[in-house]
Image (cartoon, rainbow, N blue to C red):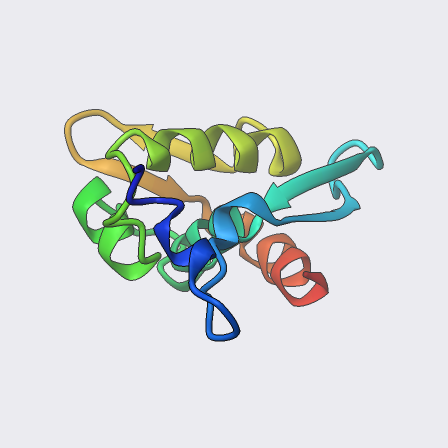
Length: 115
């Protein structure tokens, strides 16, 4: 049995896999309704906490509690965040990680607080 689904089968004290729950809100960039998973929002929060600084994949996985997922889960979260915040919000620093540009920190905080 897939380890990811195992906690969902344990009676009244079952754990919930937050990756499957989506929060729907309006994009600051396009005024369209968008959905981010709770995991995507956790990644955005880590980036917002370190706005202007490069965050490595390992650091992002540890701080957003993504260690149980594939390393590529960070990439998926970044794509989702860029759809909401715009392509210029998160910069890829090749070989090092990602950086939320400082001028997008306020918009990111507003988005996080609304979730």
